[in-house]
Image (cartoon, rainbow, N blue to C red; front, side, top):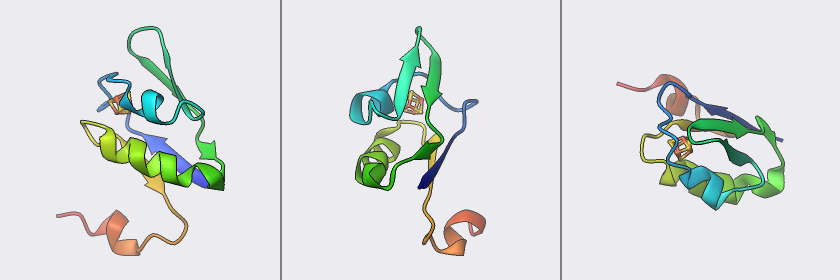
Length: 75
Ligand code: SF4
């Protein structure tokens, strides 16, 4: 299971994520983003691409093996 969080205050509805990982992200209307917060492990690669493609870095992929600094070490 891959936990995902999207900062909807940042999200500008560019739909890059929905384009790259339509199984997880979907646009609802022009601006509202719907997503599955518990994606399948098999979706990890697509998720990483979607997160990287988001113009405002609103997608946080909470990988289980992520180093702690990645979460708490922001300057
Ligand atoms: S790519 Fe980023 S800004 Fe665009 S809809 Fe997805 S989360 Fe929102």
